[in-house]
Image 1 (spheres, rainbow, N blue to C red):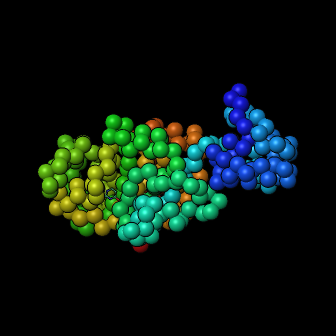
Image 2 (cartoon, rainbow, N blue to C red):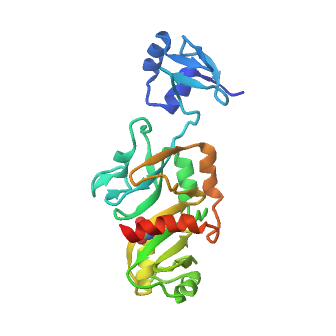
Image 3 (cartoon, helix red, strand yellow):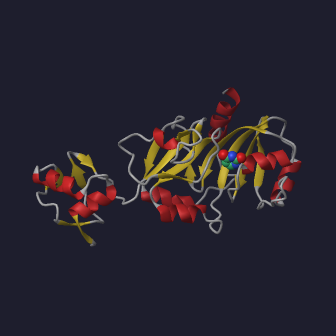
Length: 259
Ligand code: URA
């Protein structure tokens, strides 16, 4: 039963300052487990308390995790130096100080991007040691060749001499210009450079998984969903590369071909 002051609990999970929280409690705007609490220094159980401000639930997690379906033309950075930041796509009710994109997708890349303020988790996820796999669907300029499977599985050498870790790749059924590729690392422009090394060219790239986080089909470009901490732990429990349903792949493939 970890006891914590109500104002500390709220300020760790929202942008309200302690003095704003004091005023809100005095006005009877804050409820804990359905009961109005009038003093901001009241101790609550941080594991079980359901806190509401003006009838809106405060997220139980200290950190926020958002899965964005990144559209073309946005930069995966909190800065706006090279284009409009993906952070501008986060609606105000989910936005919170300290959020940043955990990992990068190129400006013209699409798909799953985790946005969080949990630095430890981002570090664990991006650390080369953790090898969290990421799966990309790519549209190629030239037909997929079966020799790529062997070349990528041995760890391809890029044009600048950098060696990649072994990667899985396969053609998408019924479409010789679409392929799925699974990487366990994140070098700069890696997927594009890997296909360039076999004299092909990536025309379009969409990330469909980050570890166990799978891009939901219902999520349109530019939309995002808040994830629960337990969903995020799935990051470290990825699906098998060969286990996706044909319907799931054909849903995203149709998009890649028709847009
Ligand atoms: N590899 C690339 O080339 N681009 C991305 O955005 C992600 C992986």
